[in-house]
Image (cartoon, rainbow, N blue to C red; front, side, top):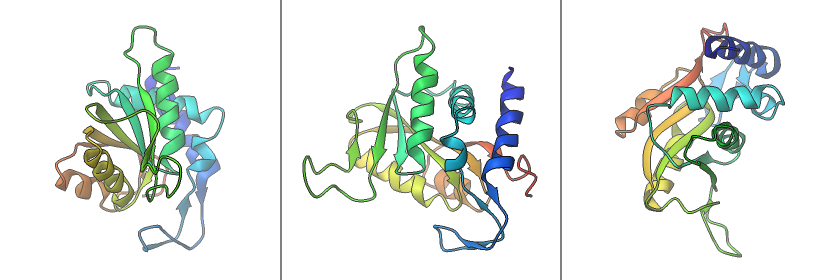
Length: 185
């Protein structure tokens, strides 16, 4: 399938599997008439490989060696990218990482799990963006750990300020799908 066909198929899967039409309170505290439960898609057998390939294509001009974001939404997105890159024998390897919501209180007491991000170019990802708060939490954690954030990518941008918030911090931002792709805006 072509990149355009992959994108159209992903949008259809999101519309069919993840869009729930009911009143909800988002993580930002804002209320909405629908919810995009992207874990229904990012953990789906057909959609996950599409997400990996499409995010890799979307960020082909960015050089990064690690991908991750704030748990839980970013975890399957990061591993989808990791697997997409691993399918290309000519690509430089990309590791995935997880940013915890708070530092683990036992064991290694880490905030970022997985391979070390210090000194590495990093792509921060998330499943759905509303205000950009989750992405910026991950960006700040990566920077504090010594990583170099090359950009932020999301699978679905709700077009409610995430792009503006992330770019205001000087970080490039891209989204695979917007509300129009999901026939929501």
